[in-house]
Image 1 (cartoon, rainbow, N blue to C red):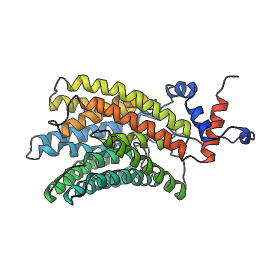
Image 2 (cartoon, rainbow, N blue to C red):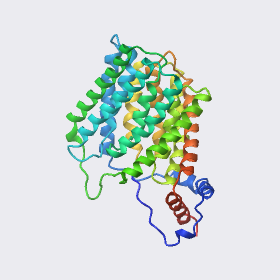
Image 3 (cartoon, rainbow, N blue to C red):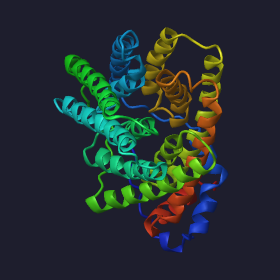
Image 4 (tube, rainbow, N blue to C red):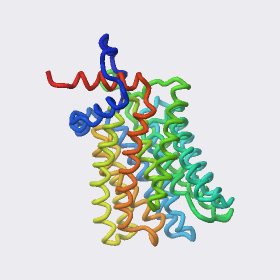
Length: 379
């Protein structure tokens, strides 16, 4: 959803704006009530089209890899197909360029993290690179106006590429599989560009708020710090997918206002728990790859339709999609046990993310939160 600047109030200077006051405002019942409200979605046609394009790219790539000598790369092909989700509200003739850029950065993320295993980097160095990637991809996504889903898809790819040991051929295979699927997704977007609905005065496209280069650098640094704390905490707790925790923190902290960050934290935690339960029910049945593929296609389309209505509802669909893709990538190691770990990582990431967001907030951030809180008190 589009975030608009909060109006300034002449009495702002009298509002409590300490960090403890900010945390008290964030834990107020009003934030919980606000997080379950449904918003007005942007034009559904373009969002649904992006989901269909990603689903089509997945439906074409996954079987090609499953029935080839490179079936072990199906997870990376699925990651490449996700670049079709970007740029849905980009101006005419700009969207295909955005998707092509995202194809490069998605492939680069897989290559860079995979290369660390080939170079023999210890796990601590890999986790540090993962945290740095969170800040880097936030900066890239916002500066180049890639739009939804922002840096999270790139972080997902980087995290999925963590490995203990790889040889150079395996690094090349992973990168090539991602690039092939991403290129196919780009071609699908090019071929169906005319199906995108143009904006109208009555239904304009949502726009990300404009941010200065210095503001973007600060946001990226803050996200990287939070991700660094989160991934090492996840690793220390023995969780196997610290990237999920990092994504939880990034999702919370990329909001431009503290109350939006709290909404995202609550919505991500609640939506993940419901979505993980659905994924668990499906995975305990040991579904075939074909059933997983069909479910993935449906989830991709419906996620893009509902994400503009409520972020929490979208998480109910995003969570099983992520777990099913992880299961496809490593069916022997994955399974129903993935669901509780996804919940644990998400809770950890969201909680640490909101704490770091408050700890590193500016006086202006806290002023806006205090103003927002005061305006929504009864009476």
